[in-house]
Amino acid sequence: MIDASALTRCRHRVHLDAAFPAALAAAPEDIGVRQRQDAAAARREDIRRLLVEYDPERWVVIDAEGSMRTRAEDTVAACRAGADRIWGAVLPLERDTGRKARCEILIRDADRGGYIPVIVVNHKVTDPGRGATTSGMFEWEPREDPTRKPRSQVRDQMRVAQVYRMLERHGLASPARLAGAIGYGSDVIFVHDLSTILADYDERFADRLSVARGESATVPSRIGECRSCPWWPGCEEQLTLTHDVSLVATGSRADMLREAGCHTIDDLAAWDREPLEDWPHGAFEDAVVTAKAWLAGAPLVRRFPQIRVTRADIEIDVDMESYQEHGAYLWGTLLNMDGVSVYRPFVSWDPVPTQDEARSFAEFWTWLMAEREAAALSGKTFAAYCYSRAAEDKWLLDSARRFAGVPGIPTEAEIREFIDSPQWVDIYQAVSDQFICPGGKGLKKIAPVAGFRWRDADAGGEASMSWYREAVGYDGEPDLTQRERLLQYNEDDVIATKVLREWMSDRAESEIPLASDL
Image 1 (cartoon, one colour):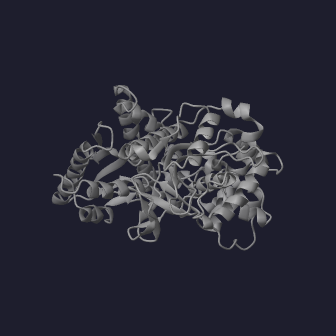
Image 2 (cartoon, rainbow, N blue to C red; image 1 turned 90 degrees about the vertical axis):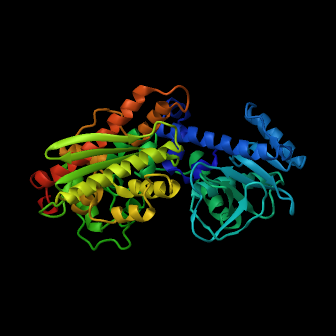
Image 3 (cartoon, one colour; image 1 turned 30 degrees about the vertical axis):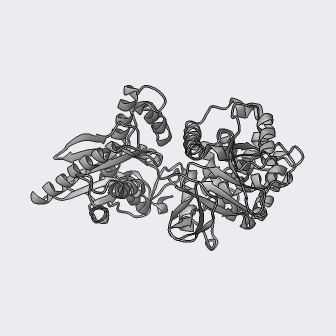
């Protein structure tokens, strides 16, 4: 039996999950996965309350405390009775086809009969633009939306397609072949056209079911999913023993190399043919150098003899902490001037989203611009640094939009003037431009090469999400020790950026080999 999540999952993981259920159950819980599950459950509850309380007479709510079998029987009975809206639907297990599924909402198609599945998810399903079809939250009225464009989410497509196929089994599917998804931050239902999805779904389902039932062989290969997979330690050991090429060229790149007869890291390091065409994610030559570096045990490789990084008289390192899409609760800064470094956090401990976030952001921005202006007035150079600016840029701009008009909040134009200036420096980009990084480019991967270590062994983005929930009291009384832990983690991040920048200026050229040295 498989649910739709298996259809976008690693094939080898599907095999291992099915073949060794006891080992899977005993595997340590992944903190990040649990956080996402908890956040999704909270999101579903918010939507349930919104919809059901708006018009309770229209809804049949399936008892979530009942057994899966009872809930499935109640769902089918509600459909047979012609319920207008059903919350918490469970479809009967199909032991012959291998399907199982749940769905937050079933909406009766008043015009054509049958039911339309609608799921509730904790990620965005549309972006600003044009081309999406949406419906209002309280009435099913699909229409072209001039303000939104679809955000591709294959996992959502597979999930609604599986529910639809199971509704078909009982003669309960709407002939309209439509489905919906309510995403994070949305006040509409995004409409999926199942007629464009079902063929892909059927192919994927047949493949994964064959794998789960042991009818198709699989082998491990490194992909992005490995980061949170409970089976990764075993797969990594196997791949390392064989020098599998996916360790240095993950995902589709490994598939391309295997098709070209290149199966091991050694094969790639010895590549003497023309580069592969349509090579994704960087230059093919970088992949060859990465393979050589892996074999040599080199954590980084210089692209150029000289390493350059922007330096200034007054330097400020910035690191932002956010909680999912709810808000940016902490702007951590490290002011470096005249050989002295001072950490200063601008933080709100009200659970985000909160208006207090505007206060902490305004204080951060006012302070940063004051330091910038003071440098200019004193004739000193100024630079502010971050590591991988995408998140900081997003929350700088988003905060300006959300809190426009609040005292101290800059305009979007003011934010853009700063982030587009040479005074806003992304050290991640400086690393990417000048180094080949066999082990990855994340700050936690690169800063240790420069000699920096985090004080907290568990420090990381996923862990900080859990610490934040405890720090602000999402699940009980606020834990002040977790607030200190978050501040220490944030301080270490800005210090790591400083250490890395200084190492690039002072020692990288003597410590890191050139590609030609390999």
